[in-house]
Length: 214
Image (cartoon, rainbow, N blue to C red; front, side, top):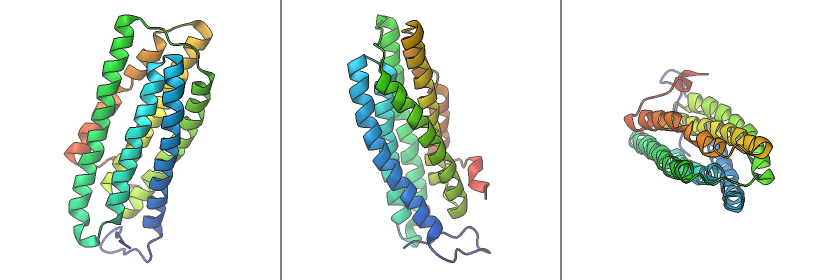
């Protein structure tokens, strides 16, 4: 099992931080697979671009988790190169998400296609908001302990997913309560600057502030 030292002067005594990071990524993959299935089915039924986009975001988050599982399992000799490749791959997943949101949300606004209210979607968004906030915090701590910028970027992606959950919740709620059909695609579009910024930082290999947290 690979051990990643926190620093040269402070070697890790056992593989507990790494095992925790792997468990978090396996949980992320499992949760997002379920989340994607529910969101896409409910989104198609309701005609909600934000809900379908949320499902596709979950698929992208699953891809990111798979990348991190590979990264955390590579040998110590290959860890530096794997870290760079994983960081760039995670960055690409941000842009896949951004492209979908831009296309689908723009289409909905231009065609003025109102979604039907979706109670399952509202419940899913609320639960996902809680889960993703917890995952973001847990991954940030794990990234700081093992010194992985790729894991920190994945934590940021979980944060984006939490943000999208909140935006989805607002969009679906406003549509259900007031019939504001435009709130759904606007809620999805509102997250684009965050998604693009995080993608650029990951591809450039920039470490976020959580890498230095204890």
